[in-house]
Amino acid sequence: MDNVIPLEAWFFEVPPVTRYWTTLSVLTSVLVQCDVLSPYQLYFSFSTAVGKQQYWRFVTTFLYFGPLSLDFVFHIFFMSRYSRMLEETFFRNNTFDFLWLLLYSSISLLLLSPFASLLFLGSPLSFSLVYIWARRNPAVRLSFLGLFVFSAPYLPWLLFGFSLVLNNALPMGDLLGIAVGHVYFFFEDVFPRLYGGVRPLSPPWRWNYRALLWR
Image 1 (tube, rainbow, N blue to C red):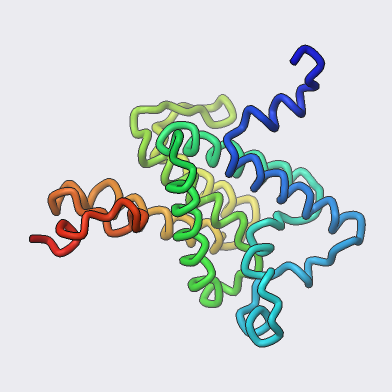
Image 2 (cartoon, rainbow, N blue to C red):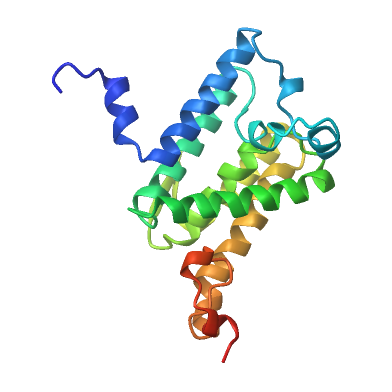
């Protein structure tokens, strides 16, 4: 192990889902940068994906975070950081449960994307993970650029406001990520306390069918 370079150490240290999502996302942008792939081959369009049988678009829309740039590094950092923290804490040794969360979030974003005219959904998906992590860690204190300290639940809204000011446009992707993340958080963390432990968004293999009937 003494000969393992830092990049290899990172690769095998990161939990599996975050590891491969990050790797595939970086590889996708590199291939686009090298003109091996085109963004026009990757974006999501239901009519194209189904009508022309280009089913890979259901996946590649979550892998392309734009051309190699500072903005790309920013998005990859937040995606890998908060995906990793969720996978290492709340989904530790529960890889399939974490995959279920990503599946729920991905399907939700695919259904909502036409209303927001979004072609690439990797950023909204990672933003939903940021929201879930932030809501599940209310006691964590964070610092924004070293200027002020705030509680974790304010993080997604701070990022939303920062993006709004920076781009001078409503960040619809961030809003969709917040909406999808909030639905998951509500049904997994709030709803069970109100209805005797019922978790409608839990993976099917964890469903308590009697509880789901609310009897």
